[in-house]
Amino acid sequence: MNVGKTALIRRFMYGETISNYEPTIEDIYNKTLEYENSTFHFRLIDTSGDSQFNVLKEEHYAESDYIVYVYSINNKTSFIQGKRDIKQILSILLNSGRETMPSIILVGNKCDLKKQRKVSALEAQNLVSLIDSICPCAFFETSALYNVQVNDLFNIFITGVPETKKTKLNQQINNVNHNVSLIQLSTF
Image 1: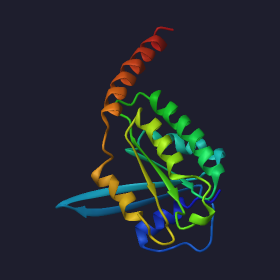
Image 2: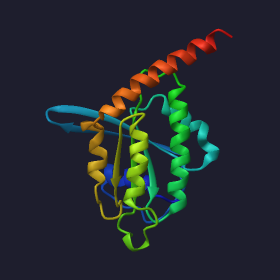
Image 3: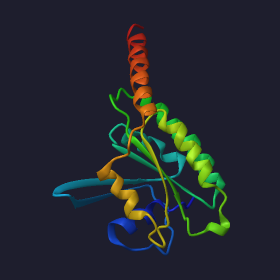
């Protein structure tokens, strides 16, 4: 399913657009940015949207500071699949032994196709509210083709996703529950 993950990355990395769609299995990009007298190094991992490569993706979840999930605003199926995938990602993360959760960034790409919109911004915001009860979450609508909010999306890796009071409280609760489940597992 072509939602534009690679197009967003290539627009950010090289300022270019992609004219031909080629499905991704996994590509890794590195970028260094200067911001307010500090240097930031990014490692962006572009993974396949194909479920047959889930094992590759799961390896990266435990190491990631940010997980960016891209759907296309003109493809309702990509959003529905996104809900399922994010639920699975959160389940993996909650059971991974991580002390802190990564931030999740939900991205509705192809916002230039407004007349073909199938997913409203409100639907996405509702999903963000649910995710934000577990870990910090942000939402962007982008267009890789017209460079709409692409830099804002990637700059959040520097500025961070603001945590809500609800997120902080639920992270504390989840950590307690997670520790209890680990103790229960270790007694068998």
